View 1 (tube, rainbow, N blue to C red):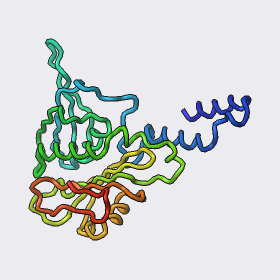
View 2: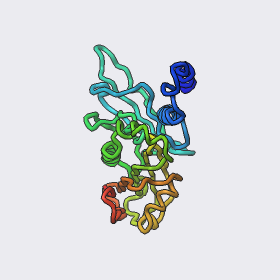
View 3: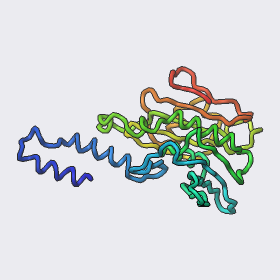
View 4: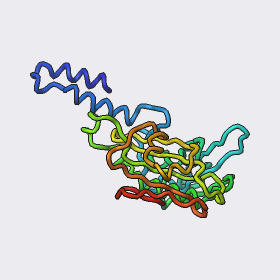
Amino acid sequence: MLKAYAAVQERLTEAGPQARVSPEDLTKMGRRIAARLATGQNKVLPLPFFRMRPGMLSGLFTWQPTSKTESVWTVRAEFPKRVKSKTAPEILRSEKSPEELAAWLVANEVYDASVPLTAQSLEPPLSIPDMQSLLHNLRAFFPAPKVFDPPVQAGLHKERTVRVFVTVNLTIPREVKRISRIAVVWSTTWGQMFCKARLPATETLRSNPYQALVKAMGMPLASKPAVSFHTPSKSQCPPVRLLGGPSASAS
């Protein structure tokens, strides 16, 4: 696509300098295309040319197959049954953590509260309500159209984090009272979404949260980032709260 864009620039040369595509335009276009199509470490990539429509799914079925080496989280999609059809649910996605799987479902607008969510073989302490709460809060915090369609002009500036969603002790026994493990999902000024899961953490997340988040993400924050901390129900670990910022929240 970038080569085609450059070819257009060459053809416009005959029309005069004012009609040419500027280097700034190429930069903005290149970063917008890369944000939507290029893969990257920890990147949550939306499917190109794909959009869920109401009624496409009749249910989502998640499960965690038993593995001696590593955890695998998979989601199957149940589609409305056709007459005399007994089609089994189709695998949509597999990830190594519930947070990564949830982030993908939200980024691609697959999850909707109206679609029944069931699960099998969930390892304690996770439950179906835990997954429903995680998906609900992620979807509310990351409205997909807004996340992946930022102002084009932002592509001329350094990429920064604008929204950060942090799960605290989601897969840790509920009786643990201290911060032990986190997962971080964040979106950027260039329209990219990332997720890092299974990160060890300590109580320093309370005393210096912004520094801890920048270290975890490896990316600078915008001047006024929106930050949300998600602690599962029944967890005895006190919620993490940010003081002094109108965009800070806890759930």
